[in-house]
Every structure is written in structure tokens, then in C-alpha cells.
Length: 307
Ligand SMILES: [Zn+2]
Image (cartoon, rainbow, N blue to C red):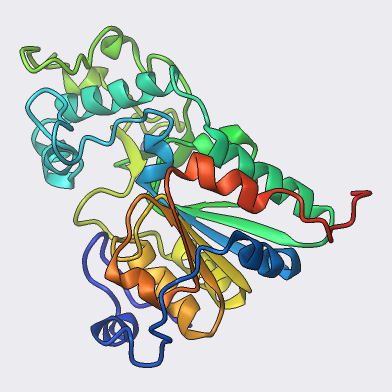
């Protein structure tokens, strides 16, 4: 399927929009099942599993999202600072925010949901079966848990992009530059560090020295078309889809999972919420995904025990 330009967190392409307008049209309206044995039966035969993950998976590792009630950095939330306009206006403040988020990740670890997904990918790869993680999370906890096939649709806290030459690179420095050392405190009484732009993270490509920005998708920006093409391939090829830590009415699962379900492919949700949208899916497992996912993805009795 060709993906039209999809703008982050908002505009759906016409194909999906039509489907979402009347999501029940061709779907079975029966309540989704929470029968784990029935899920496991389908799981044991799946050759190509797509796992969509969202903020709920990170939240169970204690990663702050700066969204919703109480989710503030100083007096701002993510939607105030995670924009191209905020960066153009005050790159020092935005870099303080991202520096803080990078440093916080040094104290966080993958949880049982991340680990179950990674273990499942590793085990099934030896049986010529594929698991792909499609995540909106930018914290790299899936990678740290050991997942290999990861499509980060919102980028990563640990990648930078040069605003001059466009070069992207991985960056795990702590602090990312000398001027940010000790900066980024989240307390609402903290003043801006007011770091001169030449002292913020700069491009190291020969002769460039342009300003770097976090290589994440900000509000109002378009998703990377190469990654979206790969996501579409995974969604078109999968024979089982899991939606983990994000409800099916919330982006991005709202865009991706319905097109899988519409092909007649089983979709299983693992999250804290039960919404009317879950009715179009085959399974729904309610609760923290760190609790519900490990038994769901554990080795099935029919799997080859030698690999
Ligand atoms: Zn550059």
C-alpha cells in the first residue's frame, strides 16, 4: 500500500480515514476475547508478528512522558517544547529539556514487557519466524532489552540531526555537550540556562559545524517516509499483530491496527484501557503489559524445543 504524506499525530491518509469513519463496517462486533489459550494457539502458528508499542510500555519503566496531568518539565509539557517553532525560538531551552530526558534514561531500565518481546524475537528467529517492533517510543528501551527489528516511527532521544547538512548520527554522550552539564533541572523555579547557540551540540561533519537537534519527530512534523514504507510492508505481511501499551483509538495504533484487522489478521491488544475501538479486534488483555505480555509470548508447547 502506498502511504500518502501522514502528518504526525493528526492527519490520516484518505484510505485510513475512510476506514476509521466507519470502522465497524466489515468487522465482527463481538467483544474481543481475553482467552489466553486461544491467543497462544494463534501465536504458536504465526510466522510474521508485528508488535505496535506506545507510551504505556515506557511508563511501566518509569519513563516520564511530559504529557497529561502532572506531566510537566518546569512549566511546560511536551507539546510546548517538542515543536520546530519552540526550537527556533529558544534552542537552549529545548536542548535543556532533551538533555534532561536523555540523562533520566540512564536511571531507567527495560521492564518485563520489553524483555518478553526481545526474547520472543530472538527465539522465533531461530525458527525462521519474524518479530518486528513498531514503536512510537523514543527511549530505546526496546533496543536495550535486546530487540533487533525495531522501527522507531518517532525517532530516538539518542540520535541527532544537523539542521544545516541533515546528517543524522547516534549519540550517547553524557552530557551531550559541556555547556549542558548540570543543566535541564525540571523544577518549575529553575531559570533557563540561556546557553549561546554556538555552545549547544554542533555537527561534527567536516566543515559543517551546524546546530544539531534531537532526531525525533516533533508535533507538526511529518513522519520519515522510508520508515513509514517499511511499517506498511510489515503491516501488509504480518499474520498476527499485537498492540501494546497504547489504545487502539490513540495514534499510532489507530492508524495501523485497523488496516491489519481489515485484512482478517488477528489483532491482540495489551493495555490498561478498554475502549469501544477494541471491539474490532480479536483479543484484548487488560492490565499492565509487564504482567500480561510475558505469559502470552512465552515458548508454546508446540514450538521446537531444540532451538
Ligand atoms: Zn552538519
